Image (cartoon, rainbow, N blue to C red; front, top):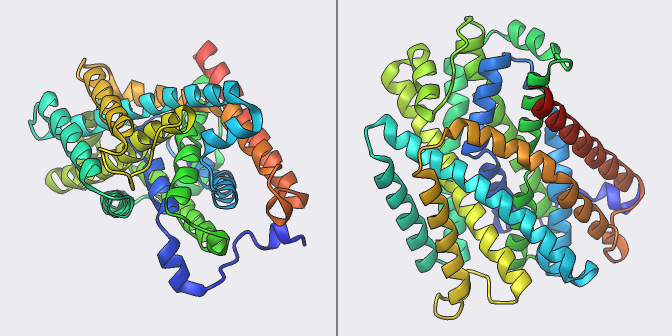
Length: 416
């Protein structure tokens, strides 16, 4: 077995090194289960029962491999994703990657802020007030904090997503039904293929690649930290997919299995549909906590990603280690992106449709993001280069994921 393969999950230095290094992987993975991901998983379970459950498991190793390559690139080169593309392929390709990222980030932010607004509406809070509090709070956090403090806040908020696992347990899904349902995959149905693409786009997202690579650089992780950073990523990949599966199981067990095919057009609709099966007060509270945690951590990660990527391409300071006075453009772009997304959400669009549609868009952007990722990893020096059996495995999984995502999205959109 080559060094490139056998060392993928090695952990030199033991547990202490892991706890010092962990953070970027867990943060980006918890952000992966964002409001759009939760809405997509909920729609999947409500419309198709357990037939998309197996896909959540299959996506775990693919998600790990993609994000492990970003960790490797960041630690070995000390450069962010956009900056690295610019140095290796030229500024034109860097701008293309940045445009792809900004499109994905804006779409994701619509989902995150929409999720927060939806939770507020469940408790009678006006949309404008929820959005104002979200933009103000997230801006204040970044303006007054360092990378370490922002990472800790993001992880604390993301931990609320674990309530979805508890909600799934309370729904009492039948194991036999889950196994039988997971084996049914109606690949001939355009509507099903559309949701396949949405789920792929909900798990493998362009902004995750940019964020984690920039985060390991900003955290100043070195080659000795590579093993621990890989474990950080692996644990996060399992955790995020467990949460996605839990949300799918909840709606499959409470809606699809009972024959109640409810139209889920808002966050409140999802909560109202499952609350009677979980206890109106408790179910609503747990769902609100999980959705708020998912939305907030993703909003932090996505907005930082957009601001950092612009900084990498344009050459201005783009880290939280610089104060607002030292990096005014970075902080201004952060607040501007948040504000634009909040104004768009305030227009009252169908947030569930946006959330699912954004994930399909992500699937269609994967060729650009994952293609560059693979090529960059093949250019790394020496033992850190993607090569051998692991390169074949990574390339094959990326190709299959991209191909399936594009096929499912195209067929689903054309024939749906």
